[in-house]
Structures are given as structure tokens and as C-alpha cells.
Length: 216
Image (cartoon, rainbow, N blue to C red; front, side):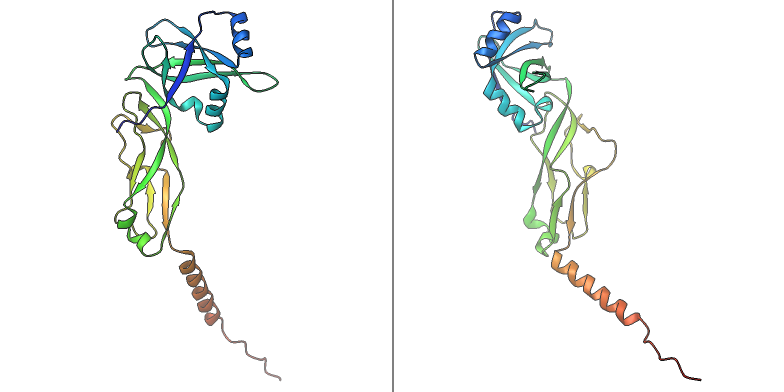
């Protein structure tokens, strides 16, 4: 299932060059350029506060955006570079690359768990312990999954969910070349503690009684 690609709005920058870029920054904008996709590059401006919020949210360089620029068709892009001020570490310039629907890109996709009410482990008081809340995949720009769905139906305490347990969209594959863990189903803490106590009692029972040494 294709995911909802977030919009990213920008304005067309008619003047180019260092002078225009400096003026844009004074106006609270970050200059940028959009290139690739078999079309001519265009110069854009992005509101500084909007960009800073996106950067703080994380994964900016691996998030696919639907770029909206007035006077141009919407286009899917991914940011390939964020230039920053050498002292203030604030964004000063952006490079966006246009993507075709067949373009392969790396994206982090969130993990969603379903059918919790049909999971014997959870019904027995077990605990779902997620190991990864998102997975980095190589996907095509035209077929990006909204989430990776993990079906918990029928899973028992002690079961481990790995990436091979998840059905990936056609053409997608993890960037990690092994069957890594997504989540575990563990016994409740009270049961674990009780088992530990029982093992301790058994161990104590197995210790032979100490006999006093006989006197000669």
C-alpha cells in the first residue's frame, strides 16, 4: 500500500546568485535548488522555521516529500544535502532531487502491530517488546508502504518476530542483509519472578545437608 507522502511547500526564487541567497536568508528564508528528473533545475526558497521544524523531527534526508511550488506541477523529491552555517550550525541551503516513480531510494518505514486481541501471548498476560519501531528499506518511489504490518494473531509467549515474518511490497528489501528481530513476546514479569524463585528453592533443596565431623 502506498504511503501518504507529506507535502513540502516552497516558493520560486527568481533571482539567483550569492546576493539573492543572502537576501533570502535576511527575509527568514532558506534558498535551495531542485534538480534531476530529466528537467531543468529550479531555484526555490523555503521558510526557515518550517525547515527547522522538519529537521528537528528527524529523518529529513531519508523522507520522501511531495514538493509544491506555485506555477509548477507537484513532484516527489528527496533532500540530498543540507548546507549549514559553520558556526551556528543552522541550515543555509538545500538540494532536492526529483524522483521518478521507478527510482529506488532508502526510506525508514514505521512498524504497526495488529490483531492484538487474537494473540494468545497477550491474552495470557504476556508483554509485546518492540525492538525496532521502524525499518530502513530500499523501495521504489512509486510504491512506498505506509507502514510495515505485523500480525500478532496466534503468537505465543516466547515467539520472536523477525523481518522475514513481514510481507514487504514488491521490489522492496531491507538494507540489512540478515533476518533481524522486530519484536519479542515475553512472559509477564510476575511469572518470570515466580519461576526464578522456584529455581532458587530447587537449588537450595539440592544442596546436601552438612554433617558434623566425627571426633577420633
